[in-house]
Image 1 (tube, rainbow, N blue to C red):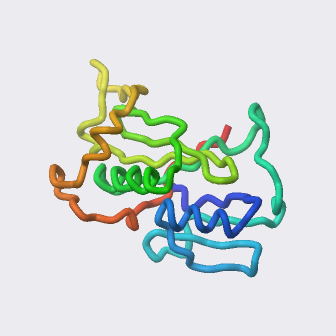
Image 2: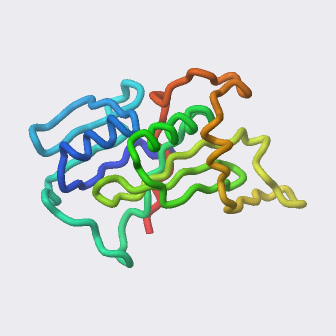
Image 3: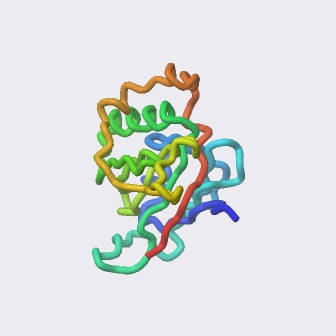
Length: 174
């Protein structure tokens, strides 16, 4: 099983659509009036749904509430993640964090409605860290953003690949 899409409640649909298209690189595939929009990165019907059905003009849940922790978007290469970081920088979007998890490199941020987002690249499985018994050994270490932002794909053959190949990834709920 894989997670097919995430559907988010937003307070201002136009603001959310601008963020997900201009900052993250999604494309609108369908709109339902002024209340909902569906977005994709590769022509799929949608990876992200945005709606104001129950949230128009609303506010983000307070800290300490249950609900979605973050939606994660998997980038096809480290260079594509680097391009995402450059795009965030151009749009003055701040990060909540940036981590090297051994299996992946991840950027953490919030959309305009306070929804947590993770933009990440998975390292090839053969490079995932393992302990002496062969068990997966993930960790959390600071990600070197200066090194990431310099990645143009020339080292791994992905130079010039755009972020339109992004896929929906994990959607942990707490």
